[in-house]
Length: 237
Ligand SMILES: [Zn+2]
Image 1 (cartoon, rainbow, N blue to C red):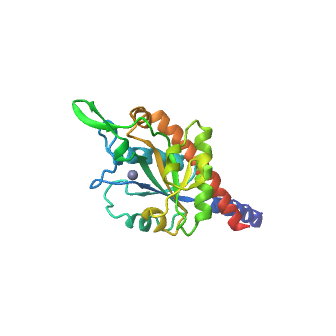
Image 2 (cartoon, rainbow, N blue to C red):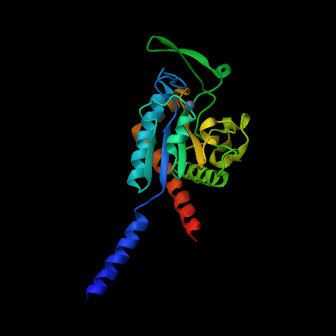
Image 3 (tube, helix red, strand yellow):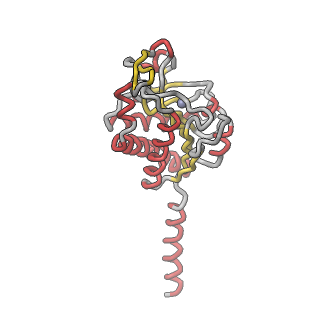
C-alpha cells in the first residue's frame, strides 16, 4: 500500500514536472524612452504602440501556458545588442514593432492643430526573419505558423514589403531582413513583428483598439504555441 502510494505520487510528480517548464518566449518592446521609433499619423510614438501591444501579447501567452520574459518593457534599454542578451535562456525571441513608410510616400495633414504626416498606400502586418540567425529553420517555421494564424483571424499581411525584402513566405506575410541587429545578434530563433502601419490613418485607429489587439495577440500566441510545442516534442524524440 505504502509502495503503491509512492509510485502514484511519483507518476503524478513526473508528469507535473514535464509540464512545469513550458516554452519561454522573450518579448522585446521595440524602441524606448530615448528613441520613440516612428510617429503615427496622429503624432503618437511607435514605442507607446509597441509597449501597449507587447503587454497584451505577454498576458495572452501566459494565459495560454507559455512562459514570458519581458525585455525593455520599461523602455530603458538603449542598445539594440543588449536586447538579445537579456533574452538569453529563452526558447524564442519576438521583437514587437509598428511600421511606417519611406518619407517620399508621406503626405501632410493637420491633426488637432498640428501638422502631421500620413500614408494611404501601405497597411498590414509583416513578420521578419534573418538569414543570419543561427536557428533559421525554427525562426521561419514559427514565423509562418504565426502568419497563418493571423490570416485565419482575418488580418492581412502588407504586400508592400515585397518592394524591399526577399520573400520567405509572402502568402503569410513573412520576409527576410538580414542586417537587423536584434535578429542576427542572437542565438535564439527570432522574428521581428510589425503589427501594422501607424502612418495609415485608419489602421492607426484599428491598432489602438483593445478588442483587435486581443484578437491579434491570440492569433500570434496560437501560432507560436503550435510551433514551439512541436519543436519541443521533436527534440525529445
Ligand atoms: Zn520600430
